[in-house]
Amino acid sequence: MKKCLMFQGTGSDVGKSVLATAFCRIFRQEGHRVVPFKSQNMALNSYVTPDGGEIGRAQGVQAEACGVDATVDMNPILIKPFGESHSQIILRGQPHSHRDVFDFREEFHRYAWEIVTQSYRRLEREANLIVIEGAGSPVEINLKDRDIVNMRVARWLGAPVILVADIDRGGVFAQLVGTMELLEPEERELVAGFLINKFRGDPSLMEQGIRWLEERTGKPVLGLIPWLTDPGIEAEDSVTLQHRTRRGEEKGEFLRIAVIRHPRIANFTDMDALEREPDVVLDYVDRPDSLGSPDVIIMPDSKNVMEDWLHWERSGLPAELRHRLEQGTRMVGICGGYQMMGQSIESNCRRLQGLDFFPVTTIYSTEKKAAKVKGTVNVAEGLPNRLAGLPVEGYEIQTGVTRPIPGSMNRPFLQVAAGEPFRESGQITPDGRHWGTDLHGIFDNDQFRREWLNDIRLEKGWQPVEEVIRYRKVREAAMDRLADHVQTHTDMDRLYRVLGWTDGPC
View 1 (cartoon, rainbow, N blue to C red):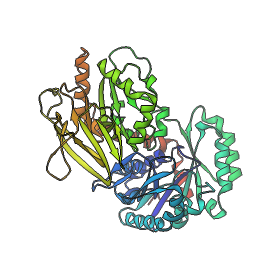
View 2: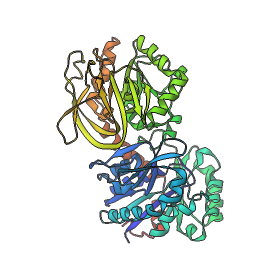
View 3: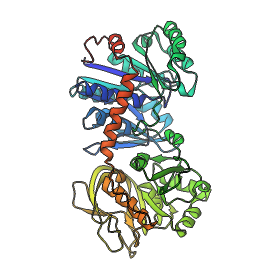
View 4: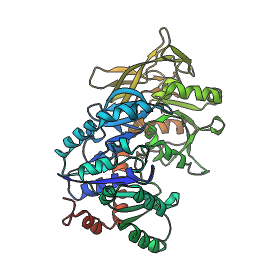
């Protein structure tokens, strides 16, 4: 059996995904053919593979860290929650069904394991090392009998497990000792050691505690990873948004962009490239009274557009948005956010009035499409000259169809194609200041992003910024920086000895 290494955590958001990404890059830098794997993922942040499959964002990013194209086998089961107890199931990149929690627990797991094992075996043929990520905690007692993502995977493969704990949230010794105590004896044997993540302060203050922990558990602490303020790696879960704050009350020429944080926000990494721009302050807003006076309001995607729009109607957001538009604030909608800005949203014989800003209506269906897309910004009267004709690319994930209302003034924003002839997509207002699109990742297009921001600057009477940030290079540099950070603070020689890799990983 080819070599593998698994990262499990004492809980959610302890840093498993980021550390797995770091080790994907570390092993790649050492010259190995490495790929990521996570059997089951629950996330609203998707990644579209080159062949149009949908997987969790984290595994797509980890594939980039490995320097390989992402495949659906890297995350064969993706669960996308609609609400508190209902989710969409994506199997090997394609929509499979909608299930409630009870049905999932009682029925789905019976055949899910075969899907997991088949995907892993296919990956084995492509790589000599597989970095595996678990989910949540391996000792959720109420879930262990249906586990297909944590210790069941480790037992099946005989995979050594690195247990990750988050010291920043407190109770790190209780996290690790408690998890070890709740594991079965054969599961404890698979734990090769610990990584203590998100440390702040003087490492010498941890020496006594680490000695006690190693004596208490019989397992080595392989690394004390200092807090990395900005790892530059796309997040998997929107829980990370609560830690994102504006830069501060900067003075000078900063463009202020407010992103509406839907209760079920999806694909929020669409905004990551904007956060890298030196003249942008990005603020995630979850209450209408927190909007302030931004230059732009972005309505991002949502996994449940109708329920999220009802939430905003109850909170009074539509009135606040219309007020800001009257004051001259620009507005952008992406996928579900674009649909909310239309005239109506329809699903299952229910029809909601949208913001009625664009003359379009969206009708949802059971069919879902995901694809990589390329295109250009439309050349039309009223469009800013800086944007017209610029190339763009990204991906679409659609479960509904958004169409112009017959007889309305149709002003498509893009001409796009995904293997088929070019088609019109999105909408833009006659003055070119407001637009909506189904294209995720549109801000990852460097020239488009910079020219759009410069158009706003020119309207404010500011000089344009000529330097164009190459976001792909920024991402690559961030992964190298993350790998160096983790490698520096991990005892790699001890790690290899513990794993029995006396001559390195492979």
